[in-house]
Length: 165
Image (cartoon, rainbow, N blue to C red; front, side, top):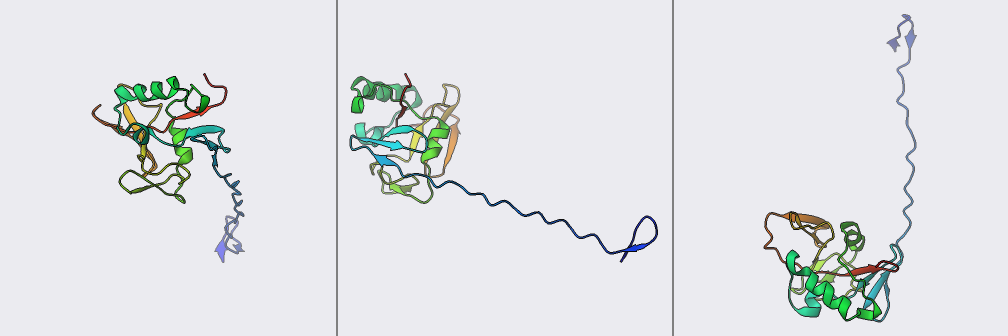
């Protein structure tokens, strides 16, 4: 028994226990193969190109040359669309799934649904990259990395959203 400020004996205070609310995460809907070289993510409303720049062109691009590939895909209106672009970090992250594996061009797994074509690259240029801050996203690690030099090469997995210009 502890003595309280009035001098009388009182039982020690019991810590309050609060019930933790269980997070009920809504299960993700599976990605949809549209059968035309595109994948739709019903969770985000995004449409992704099923192959990446490496699989399409067998070359990597620097940040300063990445527009060549984006412009090429838009000029040919891949799958009927001309508004393909590189994803934002948040959009790239939406594909990262540690429960799924796709194999890159070297047979190394990266954490993207195997509904995407195997043999590409496990990275992409992202919209947050600038000429002064060279940044790419890596699906092997699930992070974006800023590089100290512009002499970095990457692939690209293009994305589009209905209604975007």
